[in-house]
Image (tube, rainbow, N blue to C red; front, side, top):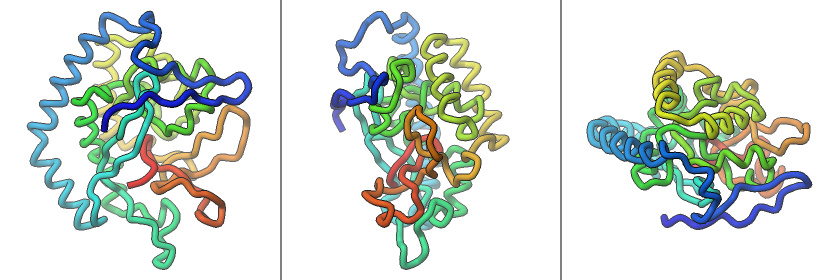
Length: 263
């Protein structure tokens, strides 16, 4: 899917969405960014080539467990707010109220939990990296509707390409609250360097092996971001955003473990 500049956000008072378009402020660029893009392409090619047998095995496992489609695609804002389709392996069954498959906990399969815990469901995102829509390291891509909820400082997370892993992921993943996640994202924007990326990648291995922060406390996946004003946390889900409470009795709206709304 070709990238489309995100529409200007209509923020609440005091909030603002990210700068959009390729003509965004060039002062946010760093010499390392060009070098990083080369490293991203090389890394993605290595993973997609050497990991092809594993990708096929996981795809077959998802097909047998969850049926079609094997891949989940959903539009997310990336660099400067430009939209792209993130790609992951499905980890949940389709919603089916008649079978009692409504909430995240009901729809998330044993195989899905294992894929999330091992981060194998993230492997297709290396295709997004190869296309230039994502980086190996960077802030995780969140939902488009969050653009209007960010403060100007939080919106700075879009000054770099979103990543498969990032500073927030090695500091707690979904166990972090939203404020801590965004603070880590902006810190990464300001501190990004080869050595920081290397440290994040090495720490990611430990986090994945120890299965830290796979889900938010009290949720099967994570809690919906509802803005910076205090409000009740809403569990996120893998499925289309509900149009009413009756349409989605679980109260959930968007899956992800850091990314994902519908699989």
